[in-house]
Amino acid sequence: MSGQRGGDLHDLLPWAIVAVAGTGLLMFTVAWSGGTIGAGFSGHGWDTPPFAMSTVSSLVSDGPVALWPTTPTTAVYAGIFGLLAIVAIPVILAVILILGRSNRPKGLANSRDLAAMCPKGIEARARELRPTLKGRGRLDPDETGNLLGELDPKGPELRSSYEDVELDLMAPRAGKSTGIAVPRVLRAQGAVLLTSNKSDVYAVTRAAREEVGTVWTFDPQGIAHSPRAMWWNMLAECHTTEGARRLAGHFVASVNDDTAKKDFWISAAQNTLTALFLAAARSNTSVQQLLGWLADPADRTPVDLLRDTGLVAMAEQLQGTVRGAVETRDGIFETARQTVSCLLDPDILAWVTPDPSLPEFRPDLHVLSSDTLYLLSKDGGGSAAGVIAGIADATMRAGVVAAERMGGRLDPPLTAVLDEAANVCRISDLPDLYSHFGSRGINVVTLLQSYRQGARVWGDVGMDALWSAATIKLLGAGLDDADFVQKISTLVGQYDVRTPSISRSKDGTSRSYSYRQESVLPPDKIRALPKGTALLLATGVKPALIRLRPWYKEPGSGAIAAAAKAETAAITARAAARLTGVSLGKQAPGRV
Image (cartoon, rainbow, N blue to C red):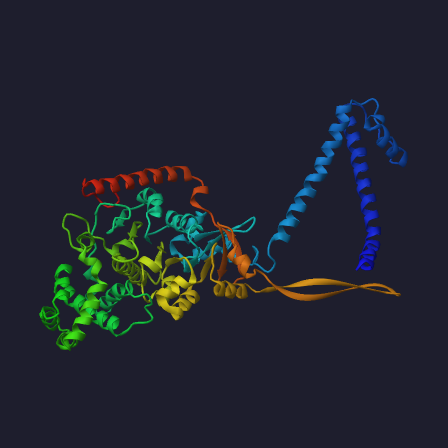
């Protein structure tokens, strides 16, 4: 070992001598040239001392004054240090650039790989997707695509196109709200739909969105303590068997942890709810009366109503359930009652009950506007998640219908931010609809805390389908699922590492190289991604590291922060008023 180190030092000695000599020559050249420049610019002549060893000796022993005796000392030193700065600055910048490139993980995408997502590429794509942009001159960046962030470490800005659909996995407090949800709502060009179980995004964005359109706040459980200023006709979506089954599925999914696994009682309850929703919608019966049918399985009214409207097969099926064994019938109806139990709360029921004194929310009109729909609900027992999923699904399906009428794609697109989708917006067939939404100009971004959280709702197969359908995937800080992180590391890939090998013999020294492969991002590096950064997996390009752009670091954030502070204070005041029993009254949509 010691012999090998001695040999290495012996090999390096000539290079060390060259480095020392070169550094000394460079320093002398800078002093010689800089002193001359200082003397010349100060008016004491451009006479240069000889470029010789005698000059070096005088410079070392007596200093620069000995070489330019008639020139003030300050002028000589000013010239030397000025030239030194001119030489040093490019060197320092080059070193910083080299170190920056060496610190960037090898094997990740650069700006050339992501050209389609950079400003020029994404603008060209936007002009293809949005007919209203054709023929226009300079476009606002927000008109061209959805801001994702900036390529780490120095940019450029990256955006997804209006046909991309997105899936983001990040731990709590990793930047989902500040870096994704809020910017996406603030920058949206068309209608907006946001689901959440907190009031933070609502508080930050409401005032800004109110300036571009009507703000509809659906807050049946008082997340933002917003007074009821709208209502949604839940049964309007149930005039067809498909619509009734979808609404029934949303209520079932809200209490079923894995929609891919439905036992007998869950499936039977969904069938029963489908029949009851159809009967109520076709006969203009209220939701409250529908709850009465559920409470009394022997009530034949829904069976008769289905027959009267021509739905004989559905009526026979419901009658078969009602006439079945008492234990089976009661089990099915009890399961159905549990799925819609949130409607027993009069505060929640009021939001889906017609109210002539308030405006009705119409999904078909919303998707063609620049309005904003906030869907707020608690998670856990008693939540209004089934209702939230129903209105969200109705709005996105209305977007599909509108897109078909417009030639295939919404312009401007509909922005749907499904924050806490696994808790408050369990649309059971969301994985199947994902790619279809993208082709219709409906930009959906689903925010989850982990891959496992999604698998708990949609099952392993459903979550795999959602993962595959998402054309943009952002993986942020705090992903602690070891198996998932290992899979991501495998997807990111490996790169070749060149290792030198030195061999010595009596004939001399030879150098050879061998190659081995290392992970571009090992699992521990993915888990330890800093807050505010994310791993970008986009279809058709190499993975990349990006830096999110939180709303509070953007231009104009001061006004948004002030509005958010005022809105938060208003939410606190409304909460206090509720506790003291003071009514704030009904107000128009968007007015809180």
